[in-house]
Image (cartoon, rainbow, N blue to C red):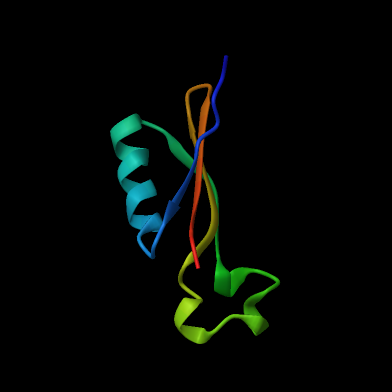
Length: 69
């Protein structure tokens, strides 16, 4: 069985996934901030750097996450 965990953070998602990338020997395959998303115009400016979605590939495993509002 293969699990696909989705982790929630409060503003430190990028930092956590950069750590996981090094610790697990993986690669961040996708990352998008709130400010880069189609929702950017409806997002408060202070939230633009928060991660809307990130995917880390480590071997045949996937770890995903985001900063929760």
